[in-house]
Amino acid sequence: MPGFEVRPPGTRYVGPVNDFKTAGNAVHGMRAVWVPIAVVAVLLALIAAEGIFSKVLPDGEALASGTVIEFGADRQASVKVGEGWTLDKAASDVNTRLFLTRGDMTVELTGVVFDAKDLSPREMWAGMRDLLDIDRHAGTEAWLDDPAEFDTASISGGLHGSLQIGNRIGTAFVLPGDDDSQAVEAKVLAPFHAGDEEWNAATALVDSIAFIGEDA
Image (cartoon, rainbow, N blue to C red; front, side):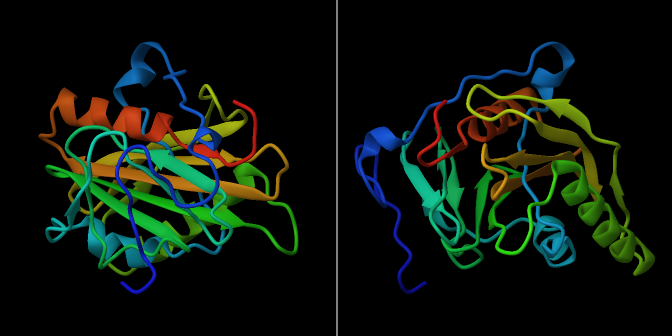
């Protein structure tokens, strides 16, 4: 994809590498099994994503553990990958969204910048649910749970809830920026038989998301 570049650990897309703020897992107890993270704008096309999530993505570029990718229209968000993740470059666009896979686990991350009005996390969640309703009426099994509040080490005021699309289950999250002008959507999906190792890897990936220029 022209203009798309992922650099190895120790390098970065924009600005000094110290801009990236490593987040710790702030979800405890039963939530620690899920902790994928998410971010959505009301107008994001969850319907289009379903076609990708319902099948195994093609092989892409294997990423070295510790690689940091900045994404979104203003490169406003960053994610740090751990061991075993692959970037599907054909389905990814650094200006909008990233598709990452690890075994049967699929993670979609979308960076959103609000130009006209600020959207609360619950408004974004309602938009996700509306799009899933359209998908379901078209014949695809799709379900999104009521959201619960949660914080990570670097992001507060977010929402998360269980998600199912087709024969894959997971979690959706809305992660707002401190200034209410940006957000990150994350959807983590895997087959029912996915093991703890895959879910834990997704937990760490989601927990590493940070907004550039915001304090952890």
